[in-house]
Image 1 (cartoon, rainbow, N blue to C red):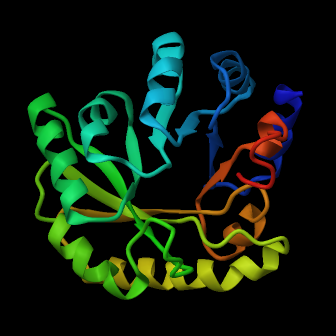
Image 2: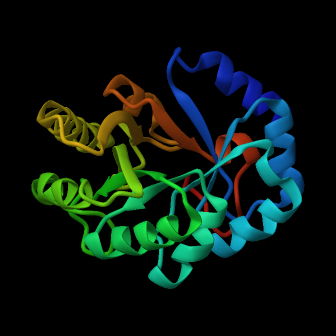
Image 3: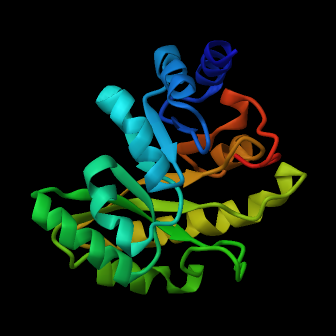
Length: 223
């Protein structure tokens, strides 16, 4: 099932759009199956879960953190991940920068935007993202590579479009600033329910879980 799902998705994605397999709660065996089918990037929500899978799978794929990062997990995250998609404050960026300096590593990151302005969600507000990017761009062991948004989860994928549009506009605005340490290459938007709309609005990274691995009983409707 996983093999067929991955191959179908990959065959349908436009050139230049990268698939991140959202592997929250998935086993190392399931993740390995996705990699064998052609997935090149694994997205994990939690550092602890990623660490368990990483011990088994290693560098057979790239690893992206797509969930919120806690400061006390930054050291381990720097060791595991090839990109952190969810930087949303100077404080957490400074922590990542510190551990990257210790490791002699430059971490590619995306800045997460709370495009739906939801109080319970992580992410910087769209109107504050330029200021945050300016501050983080001064950190020498982080390289801002673009933006990421979750967007509100709706039954109708079309309802996500305004949030993707707003994130793309912020992306384009930052790109024109030509800031040192900022390379606006990636726009990570869209999940299983909304990735096709996200692609129409400029996403070149999509995070898909259920459509690859099947539905989770405890988490229906997400990813």
